[in-house]
Length: 494
Image 1 (cartoon, one colour):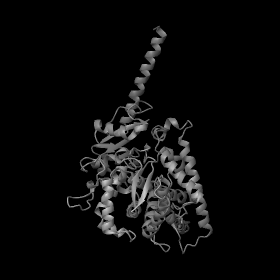
Image 2 (spheres, helix red, strand yellow; image 1 turned 135 degrees about the vertical axis):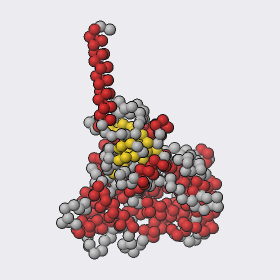
Image 3 (cartoon, rainbow, N blue to C red; image 1 turned 180 degrees about the vertical axis):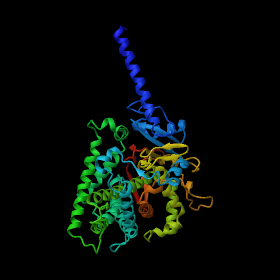
Image 4 (cartoon, rainbow, N blue to C red; image 1 turned 180 degrees about the horizontal axis):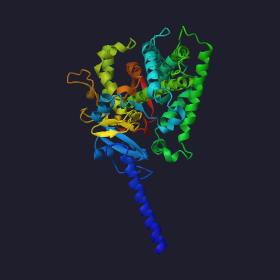
């Protein structure tokens, strides 16, 4: 090596060392963050975290650094919480401090802090309080939510009967049925399953849920500071969501044209009434942008989460025919074949309740939760987490905590039953998250899951096209969400 080459090599090494020292000094000024793998300048912990296996990477790191540790997505510190104890201590015991929300960068261009899910501060408090009130008190119109779900379940049964025992993919059957429940709340009416606009909407929703969970989206969310300058697949989600917002905007315009504040027909009317009530209030968050994006939040979350859980549930029940047989026996004994199931039946059906809980636990639908932030400098387990730091409460690690479940890595409904066969609650059951940011549609989702599963299994046996041992439950994608695989089944009348 000549002298000039040696000098260049020395300068590269020297400057790299300076950058690392400067980076570490910068980090040390941000508080006493929990330990974690040493980050590199600019790229952070890129070498330790695979974008195609973010969850697995974080769980591997927790085996080294414990249940609370810090990783760097580029230059951005993220505190990761694993296991029931750490997540409970943060989201329940320090609920206020951990109540902030971080928007995934693939969604930031769409939401920009608007809508109930991604809002913070006073905006979030106003929108959440209002949304919860409307969902809880939804007695408007002639039908209760309970009756609307029962009615929609009957429409779904009729679609299943039309298959005449032939194999079919249940994906869009289930998403249309579930979506119609939330449509009846936010839009005041359901759609016919053959409605072309509705079908296109379901396809957009399914595609966006899958896109946000791809390896590319995970990579973009981790290294947005570098990747935002380049084109890429992350723009797909924005385009899909804009089309969905356009659909909602047309519905809002129709409501505005026929609006009567004395007779609210749906969620949109209730929001418009609140906008009118607070039109002279400077601090009001009831405006057109929050109306569109809160409606999109409810519409999206109210469709994809429940329909994906149903799809996974069908798979688990076919893979474990002995469980399906026990469910059939309990339905026959408690409800019979002729009466329509109702929500009051749940208290008399501990096995069905346990099976649904186990389906949700094993589906592991939002494995890393929607990212949180601490809203102030926060003392936590001897560390000081600076205000604004992102928090990843790894819900998957809670749902599979060996201290909380008898068989955490198996499909085992007895995880939710006591020795006498009675349903047993478990504090580590957190598919809806917990604390102040718990899913505001939890009560609706629980009602839907019970009534849809019970109604379908009262009338049909679910039959796989392959032997139970050959059924593959591996997800299509596992990122922001766990996307169930595509599959076909037959429904056999009982």
